[in-house]
Image (cartoon, rainbow, N blue to C red; front, side, top):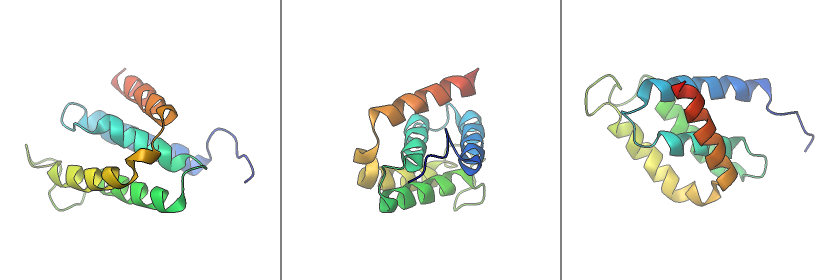
Length: 113
């Protein structure tokens, strides 16, 4: 696979959307760091396609505002997002490396600045 530099344009857009969602959800969502780490796992060329597909589907559900329980509803707003994400995390979490976790931590630090 040809190296496309640090990240292709479409991945930078996804990272910005994820960062915005995490910043808005910080303190409300207990899985922010795992969601960011999963995102970086999905961007990793070494990650198997079926793992990428599962992660991206779960993250899309988290990012898209229209879902089963709207995120603005107190207490319940993120429960459906968490359920979908944790189900996928249990299946593919072993593919998330320490590198993905460090990138997630850096993203969260920059989101809180």
